[in-house]
Amino acid sequence: MSRPRLDIYMNRRAFLGKVTGGGVGIGASARVGVGIGTGTGVLLAGCLDDGAASDPATLTGEQIETATAGCGGSDGEATIRFESGAVTVVGTITAETPCYEATLLSAEIDDGTLEVVVGTEAVDTDELCPQCLGAIEYEAAIAFDGGPPASVTVSHDGIDGPTEVARASP
Image (cartoon, rainbow, N blue to C red):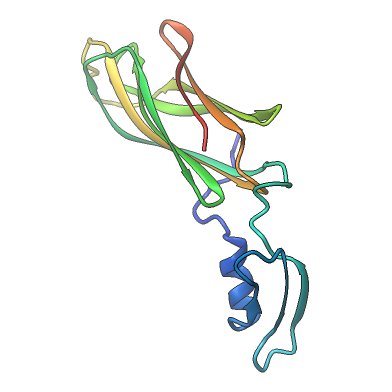
């Protein structure tokens, strides 16, 4: 199953600034603004806040990349970073051997919590694979529209079965 790649996620204010030629005007505490694009004839009106207080998060894309794989199994770990419009997870999952790569088994929002499950998949290679536990380092990015999720949990579904390895809130 092919997952959509997340190469770039959109920042609504940066997008509106480009569309209107930088003419979006909102006050420090205002939630409503009007902008007129210079020479573009674009008129925008409405709520231009970041949506953090009222819009629930909706997933828009996800990707995972294996950074390195080598001998040295671990208990599994992950670090969660909240960014504008995305959550990034950097971690290490244990595999049967180093000839595995990290896969994103699921990323779903349930009752405001983003639940991320990372697994492993054997890599098809013509080379001999070392016979040791593998430490597979990965970086995953999950993009969303609306406000950030209330919390994020990361689980590894590795050789020991599903195990929660990290939990964080913005």
